[in-house]
Length: 163
Image (cartoon, rainbow, N blue to C red):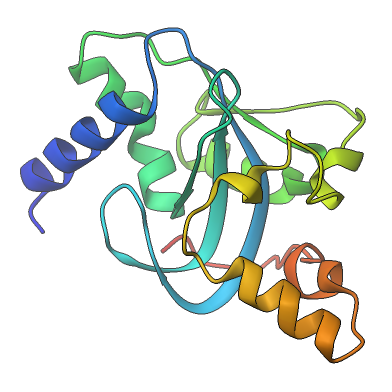
């Protein structure tokens, strides 16, 4: 996809996902063999779960779209508020800021217990439709495993490449 087409796609999805002044928060980063970015449809391996703090809606995106976020909103005539990264995603946020300073702000320690409670209305994965998450949770429970081990425990990889 050419840059112009990529930016047009990003702008279209961002217009639907957020309104001016909405704050986005990266609440989780996990690695999968292959996934599709909700913003541009490119294949990604490092999935960043972005939650709109106002609507609680979520998108699964790749690092390249996060890197283009600030620039894309500028083309839309808006000043981009930094994407908040949860403390558990600190390494990924810092890596993105090295490539594009000011895109991300890593939050200080705070109560993130809701991220591990799928019953909590603030839990971001409750808002993801058909992403297979519920299947992973169901299969984990059927096999006697803790679903959190499959979904939420991701260690930062120093050598990860921005896709």
